[in-house]
Length: 84
Image (cartoon, rainbow, N blue to C red; front, side, top):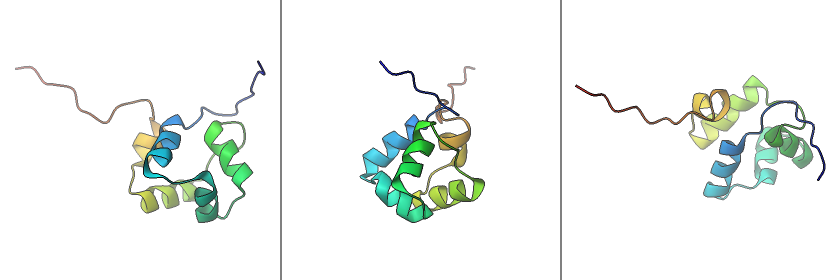
């Protein structure tokens, strides 16, 4: 098995969401005016990270939260139950 060098954590939550809504990486590449290869590397953590302006475009277009998908992607957005 090949050892993959990652520059940052992969965006697994964003990848899953794109799959859920039926958006292909090529469509995201077109939206951000980038190559499909660059988008794949961004998503998998093997290349550079998304820029702040790219994050804004993604979040605005898809109606998602930067906090949930980019800053703390491993944290659920559900609130804990409060006990009396």
